[in-house]
Image (cartoon, rainbow, N blue to C red):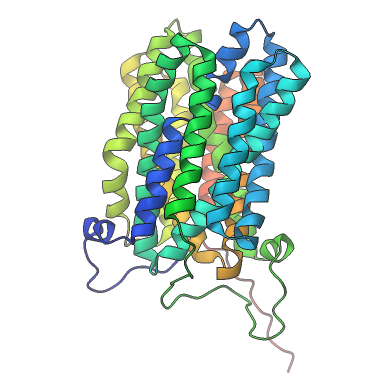
Length: 410
């Protein structure tokens, strides 16, 4: 991803001039995120039905495993059948198992349905991200597109939490049916309004080591031959593992120091407000910067900010640590997606995004399990892992040094 130079328009002007397809995709994401109740309320639903915590963990684990698989499948389908129909297939096949979940009590059936819903619900993500890359022609425009996409996701998640809480007080059947309806609405938007577009990149290097002749067929093996992508995926896995500790170590820490769940909710609410209010402006401020240092700083701030949680036991200082790791999140999130879009060859955009999504869901899936176990052994061990993980993932964002070539013998 190159650095924007010259007389670039202001970032807000770049946002305003984004292609219509970016706004259509972002609106569709907003709709489905408003109705994305399953990940948030699944635990409450299962415990309300009298299912033991261990069994509930199996259901959630099946959904998480499905998330990883769904991204891989979605990346393949996005390149194979196109972005538009991948989104349609994903949302229709998500609606069915989601609507069926409240009809069954058998653990085996719930595990199977959660796995199917988890997999299907992620298939659209690589397609939507690849479509944003296809529709934009410059690094700056691509960054603006992902910033708008993130803003839509965050607005939808905030509204969905409120709406889901209301529906859960009415009935869990209404909650799951609402989720299914939101999926079908995105399928309808994609079928009617979305159109695949030919990649429109201007003057970009399509990758290292690309040859004009004998180009192999697109595949995940070919994608993983890209050294820059492998480095990026390892960075993503570590960064997401660290970030998800905000939902593991932080609530455990507040509980251990006598704070209430409402206190934890206020801290997470602060994170949400900051992201909604400041992420777009901050993304604009760094839009002309090289992505590597920005991503590296974001990961370091996230890791260090979370590690500093262990130093404090009052709301004021804990709020300050939330501000620090939220700043890291805002520097990292949109820039990472845009940077990856610049790495991918046009015929493998879906596969690159699918691998990225798989790394994200793997990191956020194993993070709570490992983080909870480490915290149980020693709280400071977890904060140390966060600090080290933040520094390591930050280092991985920087360009790798090229090996020195030994001089030819005289």
